[in-house]
Amino acid sequence: MKAGIAMLSVLGLLAGCGSGDAPKASSQKASTPQATARQENGARNQDATAAQVAAEARGKLKCPAKVTLAPRAANAPVDDIVGVRPGMTYEEAAHVVQCTHELLVVTEDARNRFQINTYGQRLRQGFGAGFAQARAHVQKTARDYARELQYREPSRAAAQVAPGTARWHVGTMGVPGKERVVNVSREEGYEEGRGPAIESVVQALIGKYGPLTQRSGSQSGGEQNLVWANDPAGRRITETSPLFRQCHANGSPTVALSFSPDCGIVVAARIVPVRDNPALASILQVTVQDQAGGYEAIRTTEQWFAQQDARRRATEVEAAGRNADAPTL
Image (cartoon, rainbow, N blue to C red):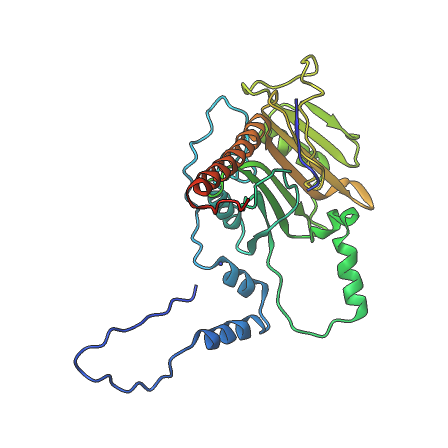
């Protein structure tokens, strides 16, 4: 049985209490909320470097990030991407992601959304993170707008990972305010002339995640797709296991996700080669899913929302019994 996923910041006003003495005249004018807003908007409308834009977005972020999630057991399958793991809180994961690079900023990400009836309540189903971009206010041409539209097309998702940058998507699930990570994806683009040999990337991945469950792609070069699958008990799935074709994932974050209660941690990687040299990597995509944990999180979250709405309706009926007008007959 599987649960499918359809693809898919306070102005403080301080009021002083008067004393017996008359207030002294101030040389500074009081700042109104409207004036403060204009100042903030003015700052945002000024040109800024990528580092300045990142500093504005990250605020008082301090690294390293503090994590409350218990360390992975020694015999458990490796389940992290640069320290980000299923089970982390939404806030912890966002903090850890940003601490992996000083230019990374977290943004709302509507991809990979689970189809859940929240009855009007807000559920944080994850976030994205990417490198901050320099802010320059110039008049765009029709060609500029056409280029931006082109790179927003889903079919050009790989091209959106600029060389020398990284991009994240972290999926979360749970009751509002207590959402936890169920899947993580990271993409990295290599700069021209700095792309590693594909086979060295494969060996580095095996060194981290262990023996492969599946590999597709020629070892002499070309796109590689790798999978490390485990059952809920943490045992590696092999070709002889009945779960071999059931527990899978795709390294690309644009591919629809599925969760099964019969599968545990599943890791997938996709290595995209350089166009004119299939033995060199241009993009690395890695995804980690806690399939059983994600399945259970989806199920219990759906139940929680349904129960909350049932209580609301029952309370309204009870109140109507006391306060509602009698019908005119």
